[in-house]
Amino acid sequence: MLTVKCEFPLIMKMQFPGITVRIDKKTTFKELQDRVFAETWNESRRFCPHMPNHGEPSQISFFDLRNEVENMEKIWEREKEGIVELNVRFRKSMDEQDKNILIFGGYGADEYCVEQTFYIFQSLFGSKYGVVIVEEKYFDEDFWEEKTVMIVMPGGEDCKYLETLQGERNRRIQNFVLGGGKYLGFCAAAYYAGKSIIYGPGTPDEVIADRPLAFFPGTVTGPHLAPYNDETKSGARATVIRFHDISLPLYYHGGCSFPQHHSVEVIATYSTGEAAIVQGRAGEGKYLLSGVHPEIR
Image (cartoon, rainbow, N blue to C red; front, side, top):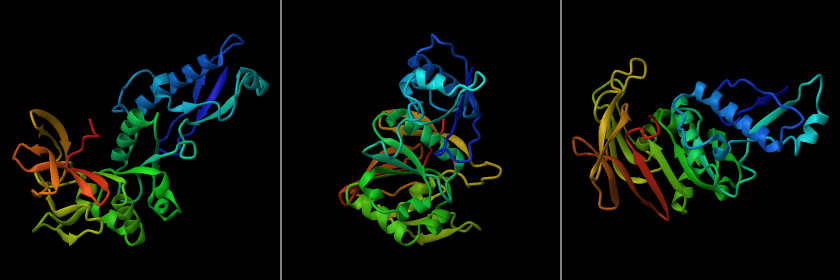
C-alpha cells in the first residue's frame, strides 16, 4: 500500500487529507500518477463542490510525484513495512514557470472567492502559467513584476485592501499595469480600481473617497442592486447580466456599477442598463473590472 500526503501551500486554510492508493509490483509510474490525480481530484471536489470540472484529472495535471521520486524503483526503495510516504505538490510552481498569474489572498480577500478564483484559473491556464495565491507581503519582494502577467483581485473588502496595500505596494501594482501588465478585479477589487468610489451613501458603511490605483478613470458607485450584508447575505442574489445578445445569471453581492467613459469599453450591463463589467487600457496595460462574481457558480 502506498500512502501519499498531499500538501497545498497555495490554498490557504484549506484542510486536505492524505490520499491512499494501493499498488503492486506491476503498477507503472504513469498508472500511479493517474490514480493519485483521480483520488486527489475526487477528494478536492468533496471539499470544494463548486470546483470547475474540466476534463479528466490527468489532463488538469495539478500535481506531480516527480518532485520526490523519478520511477517505481525509487518508490519501492523507500518502502517501510509496506508503506511509502510521499509529498505531492503543484506541478507548475512559481519557480518552474516563466510567467505567473497572481491571485491576491491576503488581508481583505474573501476566502471562498479566492478558492473559486484559484480553481478556475488553475484549470484554464495552469498548463501555461503558474497560478499562485499571494499575500500582501509578496508585493514587497524584488522583481515579482518580471515574472507576472496578471494580478487577479477577488471579492472581499475594499477598505481592507486599501489598508494592507497602501503606499509602495499600491505604487508597484499600479506601475506593473501601466507598464504592460493586466489587472482583473471582482466586486470589491473593482471598486478598488476606480479613481474614486461612492459606496453606501447615507448609510453607516458610507465610503466616499479617492483610490490609489485609478485604472478606471471615474467614480465607481454601489451597492448597485441591494445593500451588502456579509452576515445575513440578504442582498446576495443571482442577477441577469447582459453580454450584448446573450444574457446570463451571475452572482451579485454588494457590487458596483460604472459610469460611461469614452476610453472604457462596456462588456456587460445589469438589467437596469448600467455597466456591470468594463475593460480598458491603463498606460501600456489592460484592466477588466466586474461588479458581479463570474468566478462563483
